[in-house]
Length: 343
Image (cartoon, rainbow, N blue to C red; front, side, top):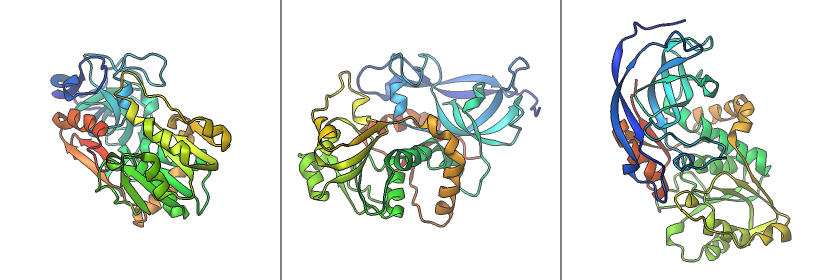
């Protein structure tokens, strides 16, 4: 076991105020300061004490802010620090797989220091030749999500027509680049004009399109083979009208619905039958066994400059609430990260 001297330090935290109905606001979170002893308690078998470096802002976190039971993720606890994925440095450990000085990514607290007891959610970082913040995105959960949702669910082939919604975020920007590397025709939609930094064939700002069906017919006159679904609602309805026979739809999320008290309905589902479309939702956790295979593929792409990876980094825990709420207004350009410490 590696150990510090047990120094007690102040610990700035982002606290979740209470369950949210409707649009998530910065005021649903607040900053507080507590204290923490930089040593794993003796009765905390396998615990790890970490200094948090980078925190990941992810759309799924909004679902955890509703008092909804039966989800794949438990709700956050009002009055407690927000938890989510992050990158951290181990300061003390009672776990045989982690020692002082190791870097990890996984579930941690939105705070300066965290005592992690659910260590089954952690991954040790071995390759440090890339920015550590990448493990909140391209080398972490979002990257694995893009890989599983595109390759495992959609079985893509060279020359196919691929559409990605919310394609400037952590997952969408990667799916589009994977598709381009495979030789597909790729169009993406996003919430502003300046978000086509990823070498796609074309792009449009969904906020400027009064008729999404007409927009898709403009960019896909021959239809869509693969749709990577991040948005839901009206976009999903329009895509259904433009899918090709035996098209595939990988359902990663539906960010347009997360802030709605009453979700929108979908009207064009009969196209699934008429065009024999395969539509499948997925959770990345069931694909983590492929993580080593994914790293073998993506790390060379990063180091050779074949993948452009864009981050939108907010500095400091005090800016974390604005960074998270900005996801749902389309304010981020690239993967939204909060830098807690750049050690």
